[in-house]
Length: 402
Length: 225
Image (cartoon, rainbow over all chains, first blue to last red):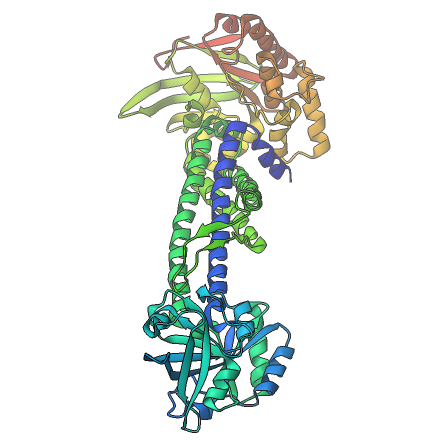
C-alpha cells in the first residue's frame, strides 16, 4: 500500500514531466475514443440510410421466393394479407408494414408507349418511412387513389409532367390484359440510372386492381430498432411457417453489407495506425521522463533498492499515468462531443446513397473501459521498455548521469 | 577507535570513457576502523569518488579485495549487495537527491519502509533522526520549502535513520555556502562522536578536511598519505 502511495506521489515530483506524459496519453486515448465513436456514428447512419432507402429492416416473402425465378410468380405471393399484416403490426417493435407488389407493365401517354417496372405500395406509410426517393418535381404519393410517380428517365421517355395522364397496361394474374389510368403526381430521382429509367410507383390497391389479385409479393417492415429484427422474424416464421423473413443486410448485401465490410476494413486499418502512433507517443514521452531520472534511480539503487523493486515502482507510476491520462482522454472526448461536435460532422453521400448526412459521434460508454485499459497497457509497456535498460545500469553510472 | 570495518587490498578500477579506458584506481591498500571520521581527499580525477563508490558498493569490484567486517565484496551476489546497501550503508550526496513530492518526514521514512520496519518503530526513528540533525518541526515541509542546508540535513537524517554501519558522503558541502557547510560538518562530527557512526566522505574542501580525524590523500588513483 505504501509503495502504491509512493508511486502515486512520485507523479508530482516533476509536475512538468507528469503533465507532458498525461497530455500525451490524454490526446492519444481521447483521439482513439472519438475515432471509435465517429466510426460507430458513420456505420449506424449508413445502416439507417440503407434501411430507409429500400427494404426497411427486412422483408417477408413465401419460403424460397427470393431464391428462384418463377414462371408464374403470383402463385408464390402472399395471401391472407390482412391477417398477416395485423399479426405483424401487433408484434413489439414493429412500427410500419409495407405490403408491396412488383410487376412489369407498359406505360402510355397516348402518343408514346414505354415499358417499365411497377411497384404497388402503401403510399402513405412508405412516404413517412423511406427517404431515398427524392421527388424533385411535384410530390410523393400519399392518399391519391390513382396517382403515379415516375423515375426521371422514365418520365422523360414518356414525355410527361405533373398532372398528365398515364395509362398502365399489364397482364393480370389470370393472363388477360388489363389497364388502369393514372395521373402523374411527381417525378423522382435516386441517382441510380437503371432505377430512374424504369421504375414507377402506384398505390397498392390500384396495382392489385390492375393485376386482378388480392395478394402481395412481399411485406417490408419498419422497426423501432435494428436489434428487434431477430425476435420479430422468429415470431412471424413461427406463426406462419410458409413464410420466410430476410433482414436488410442480406437483401441489400451488394450495397450495404459489402460496403460495410469494405469501410470496416479501412476503419480497422486506420484504427491500427492511430493505435500505433498513440503507443509510440506514450512510449517516447515516458522514455524521456525515465531517462531524466537516472540520478534519482541511482539514489534508490545506492540505498539498497533492487533492480526489480525500482522497476516495479516505475511500472506502477506508468500504470497510474496511463489510467489517469486515459480517464482524462475519455472526459475530454465526451466534452468535445457535447460541445464542438454536438451537431455532428457533415458527410457527403456514401455508396448507394443520394443525400449528404450529418454523422453524430456515438461514444460507447463500455468502450471507454477498453480505452482506459489500452492507455494503462500502453503506458505500462512504454514504462517497461524505457525502464529496463536504465535499471540495469551500474549504480555508479546512474549517479554520474547528468 | 574500534574494530576493523573496511580492508582494501590491491584494489584497481577501470571505467570506460568512450573508446578509452580510464585507470581510476591503482593498487589501493588501506584499512578503516569503526567509528572513524575519514575524508578521502585529492584533486579532481584523483579517484576519491571512485574509491568512495567502491566502499559503498555502487561500483562493481573486479580487481583486488574489499572486505567490510565479514563480507568480502568480490564474492557477494546481487541480492547480498542490495541487502548490505539497504541495511548497513547510508548515502549522502552533493545534490541531496531528495524526493520533492514527499515531505522531510517521508523522505527519511522511505528507506525504513524498505527495511520492513514496523510503522511505530519507523516513526520513532524518523523523529529521532530529524531531531539529531536539528530539523524538529520541519517534518511536514517539502524539499522545495527548505534551504540547501536543511535539505542536506534531511539527507543526513535519511542516511542516519537506517542505523547503518557507515555513512558515505560524496562532497556533502559542495552545494552549500561556507557557514552552512560548517554546520553540516558539525552535525556529521557529532554523529560520529556521540552516535559512534563511521563516516567516510570525499571532498577537496579545506574546511571539510580540517574537520575530520583522518585524511586519506589520493593522487592519480594512488594513496599517497
